[in-house]
Amino acid sequence: MSGCFPVSGLWCLSRDEGMAAHGAPRFLLTFGIVDENSGDSVLRTVPGQQLQESLRATDCEGFYNEHMQRVFKYLGKQGVRSRDLRAIYEAIPLLPGMGDLLQFVAKQGTCFEVILISDANTFGLESTQRATGHHSLFLRILSNSSGSDAQGLLALWPFHTHSCVCCPANMCKHKVLSDYLRERAHDGMHFDYPIHRLIPEAQKAEPSSFCASVVPWETDVRLHLQQVLKSC
Figure 1 (cartoon, rainbow, N blue to C red):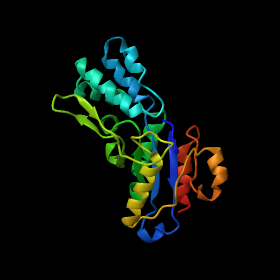
Figure 2: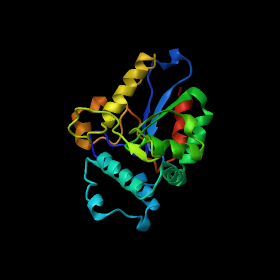
Figure 3: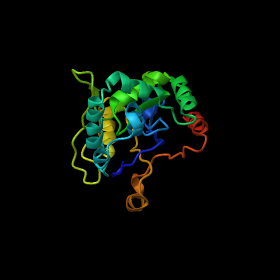
Figure 4: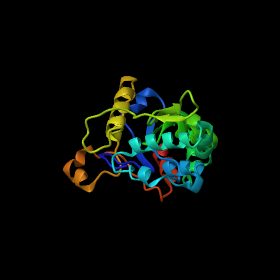
C-alpha cells in the first residue's frame, strides 16, 4: 500500500526518557507478521485460484480496500463462507524468525507494548494470530473492520476517514499511529514520535522528527532488543 507512512516488517521502536517514573520501561513495537499477501491467499478458495479479469482490473493503486470488498462479495457468490476464509488465514505462515521474536517479546512482560497496524482486515489478522498462539500479545490490532454477516459471508469496511492526500481513503497509517499515541499519552504513557522507512526526501526535510531506532528485519532483531533492555 502506498501512502505517507509505508509499513513493512519491524518498523517502530521508541522510548521516552520519562518512562522510568511509570515503572518498568515500555516500548512500542508495530509490525506486519506474515510472509504472504493475504489478499492473494484467499483466492485459494475459488476454482483456478484466480479472479475474473473484470475483478482483477479493480485492484488499482490506492483502492485496495474497495477491491477486497468486491473480492469478498465475489467469494460469497462462489459459496465461500467466513469459516472457509478463517482456515486460509490460519494457514498463512509467519515471517521467518517472527515466531521466535514474538515469543521473546512475550517473555519480557510489560517491557513491551505491541500493536499491529495493517491494511488487511481484523478477521484475517486475528485468525492468524490465534492460530499461531500470539493473539494475546497484541494490545491492539488497528486494521480495517471485518466480520461475518447474517449469511455467514465475510464483509469488509474501511478503518476510518482522513484528509491525507497521499494515502488510500480507507487508511492513513500516519494518522492511525498518531491517534494511537495521542490516546496512550492520555493514559499516562509518553512516547517519542516513532517512524520507519520514511522517504529520503521527507527525512531531509524534517530530520529532527526522526527519532526511532530502525532495525532491518534481516538483522538479529532480538539481539537488538536485548541490548535496548540492558540500557534501561
